[in-house]
Structure formats: C-alpha cells, structure tokens
Length: 113
Image 1 (cartoon, rainbow, N blue to C red):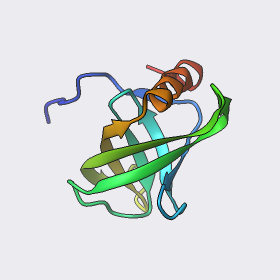
Image 2 (cartoon, rainbow, N blue to C red):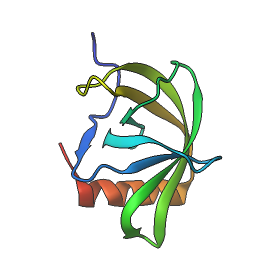
Image 3 (tube, rainbow, N blue to C red):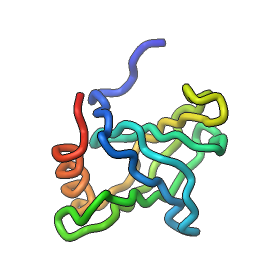
Image 4 (cartoon, helix red, strand yellow):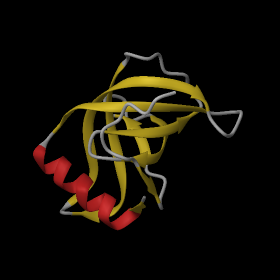
C-alpha cells in the first residue's frame, strides 16, 4: 500500500493513554504520532471515517498541560501485532494552537524516528 501521509510518524518512548474526551473512557494507547495524526492500539474496532474527540494523557506536565485535546477522523483500522487488539490511524482535523505547541514539545521529549 502506498504511503499517504505527508509527515513521517514518530514512535513514542512512552505509550500515551488515549481517552474519549466526552466520556473520559480509556480507548487505547498511542503508539506513534506526528503533527497531523496518530496511530493507537485498542481493544475496540473503529470504523474508517468516524470522528473522534480525544484527549491524550501526557507522561508529565508539558508547557503547563497534563493532556492534549484534539478532534480527528479514523482513516484506517486493522489487526494489531497483538491479535487481541486493533490498530487505528487518526488524522487530526482540529487541535488548538496551545495543544499543537504541547504536541511538538511532547514529540521532542518522548519520540524518535
């Protein structure tokens, strides 16, 4: 399959909790991330095209924040390496300037190419 993303995703040294921002429910753990989207593992299946309002729980306070809030659209969902989980790719459609700055700082501290 041809690569469609513009920016290479960066693998995380720390698996961030991915929460449903409306319910606070843990829906998975972020595996890799860039300024445009993320991949996360989950026990749930997500339909491509589904809009998600997410909160990423940070490993510690970064730029005065403990979490990043964003809205994104599921682009794909497939079996994870662990056969009990699913992996989903989300493209961000909305993220505040403050949260985007925090995301960049997070990637600088907790990710590698």
